[in-house]
Image: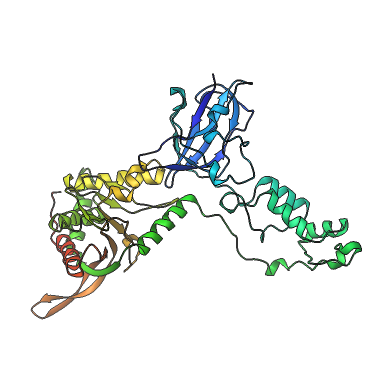
Length: 446
């Protein structure tokens, strides 16, 4: 009996995945546990292995295709078995077609046919993105001396396919064999020919540009994750009224606590509590006093949360991720520190639960650029959250020490971006001031 392999559902918030690479093709023999294909969500990469022995009877998608979760991807069975009942949407087109699918042929989501289809994906940290030109198109372009840099691709995601190259061949003048060989070797081009029947001769070819003065750039396709981040950031700025207030907090207290933690760790203290952990702990204290900030703005209504779900921006090799610590207000500073480290490591390994990356899962976000020496910046809100805190580096600033004495004191910069539709400027300023107060008066046992 044939076995259908579906696109797994990686978390409740994931609706589709991108196939980055197929490791098998139609007609290949496959053993149970062998790698079939790699795929990615907007944040993590995975691999799908074969649930059974057999032959790959058909593949319904190609590299770079975006596939809805729970949709049939390929079928494994024995030679001669019918696969038409498993084809998504009942489409009869062959797999990996160079032609883009029409909207009416978009695959429909189907439930898995049997329990054997639900194999366990293995998270990986590498990502493979499909190229900007298909192999057949590339071979044809090289054979016919067609420059592909200026071609407009008509394939999926703007990919150059064979018919694009064929169209370019048909639209240019015919080249003599000598002219074609010279064009292939030098990259020279011609817009019109003086040979028989208007054919292009070697004399008609314009000299190729000196490579020393050639193009000093490389065009690379945008990764799926970068597209998702760009879309979210653009939507955030387009669909909200964002304003940023900046304030400094006296950092002497948290620097003193940091030194105590370092000394305590030498004597067996179990947790390396960082300045970022302390700021997060102070933010939680401030949010408890300003519940109107711990909200989601929904347009016609505001959702007030009884618990604080604190998100932390994490820089990874694949891009910026913002995982959330659920019920952060229930944690001690040691617990918060451990949770921050756990979700950050999971993001860097590519094994983070996709549900923890949803902006709807968090009620407030912290983005810390202090380690990079950034003195001031404007963080962008993760909608529908009402605000986000940017944490800056610590710099010395003059301060009145009392009795007419002034001195330089370390200050940590705080930048609060808030949605002016959800919060007034006054309450946003008071909340930011409260964070500074909590930082300057922070207490915890060491």
